[in-house]
Image (cartoon, rainbow, N blue to C red; front, side, top):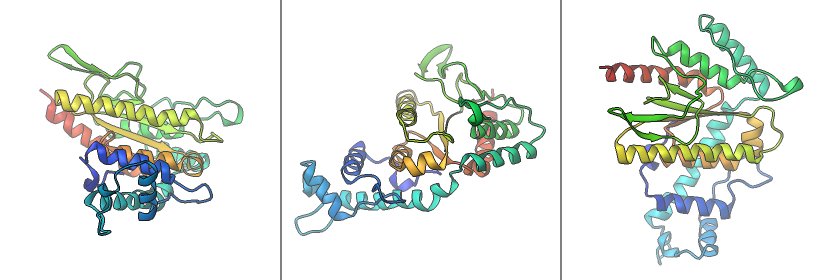
Length: 285
């Protein structure tokens, strides 16, 4: 999923309103199977509770200010893309396994060692989404290398000098962790039974990476593409819809370039890798 250009490059104060109103109104009602979209009355009630200036969102005559209208529109947009699009791409372990086997059969020429999850017993299995990503990246990377299991921090250099080194190891880099064109993170949680702190921390880790890459772009003029690839219907949809909202916010704040949901990876990732290959060829000396 790409961001809607309408909500890109908005001031950080807009996202401050989005976050605090979302928290007060609740991202989703406990009894609901869908993501909520707060209406005007709920937004105004939240503004009142937060002791914010209501005139920022509502004019004295009762008309919405540009900010108020933008907030109302964005909340509707966020709920719509999650309820009608993202949720239908999320898979369970059975579907993910079937898709992994299909992709592996389609790309028999690609030889990779499939990563395994950290589960035990009957739940121990290949990390299906990570393996699918690895196969599709390798299959479309032409003659370029790609780091599918980075064991090093991502570092950006210029003329032999280090500019920035990211705080965390990511899940993949093209063509390598040294001056990559693209990096990605994979969050697959097929066997979790609750939305625990480990899953929540995964979202905040992606936010940290995005903020570091934003600082690199703004201060050094270096753009590294950043992708978030997630799956597991029960974890993300049944338990973690509020964090899906945070991910959509993060996408439009510019901290990730795209979010890929579940089986969407098969359609979208090959095109992205071809874009990275073209960029690598254009930048070759």
